[in-house]
Amino acid sequence: MMSGLPEQSVATSYRNSLKINKRSMDVFPWPTGSTKVFAVIGDPIDHSLSPALLNAAFTAAKLDAVYTALKVAGENLEGAIRGVRSMGIAGLSVTMPHKASIIGHLDRVTDRAHRLNSVNCVYWDDGELVGDSTDGPALVASLEFEFGGSIAGKSVMIFGTGGAARAIVLALKEAGVGGITVVGRRSEAVERVVALGESVARSGEIGDARNAEILINATSVGMTETDGEGHSPIPSGLLESRHFVCDIVYFPLMTPLLKDAMGAGARISNGIGMLVHQAARAFRIWTGQEPPLDIMRHILQPPDGR
Image (cartoon, rainbow, N blue to C red; front, side, top):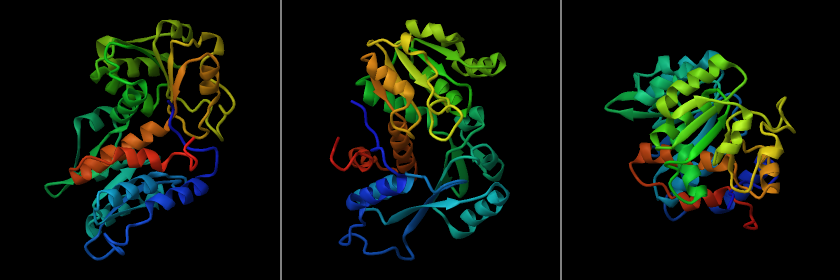
């Protein structure tokens, strides 16, 4: 089964989510001076679905907390982090273009974030601002939910050499997959990604898709408003019904790759699952509680349940 958003604007999706996500008046009628404030920072940020996900989670857990999206230009990042410290912002999600540049403004980062040179979640620990990277573990958690079990021992092919691909390969290795084949346009970039997968990873070619069980597109090919729109990173003739095909893109929901995979009878998954599990991991880090995953998934489902 594939989870995802309806083919509609982000604004419409957000309005639909508010029907379920309306702040419970019998729990916290409005934010007060004791309400904890969380935010996602990036530029652009208007498209973010994180406020819908996290506010639904806070409400379901009856936590006195709110989550918002803040546009922060690159030249204002240092001042923004000073503001986090001075105003007591309880935690941050971080998206492009700040995932690497924010590191120099934090007190420390986790080993994972250091290896990837990327932070997407910031939290307080003993008075220090700490950065972590949850992209890879979130994708693995989403894969296992959609796949219907552990991916340990499975053979995986991943397309891409950017930050998302690096995070995913590291997490796949930690999940115990049997092998990882990395495909990219530049050999030196591919080798850097392969190094994160250590002994289970190698460089490969598109034709190697025939030998993989799970195919992951971690590039922008097929994404709306990119040069790759309308294209697929994998020729349709290589796709078979035995494949599980994941595209981390969620605009559009049905990329050309996923359409081709469905046509071949393969199981598919889009980037919504990764988004939900990123938010869930942030919730767990910030609150110490288990996230209400069913509610968070429901927030991004079509109103008619399709």
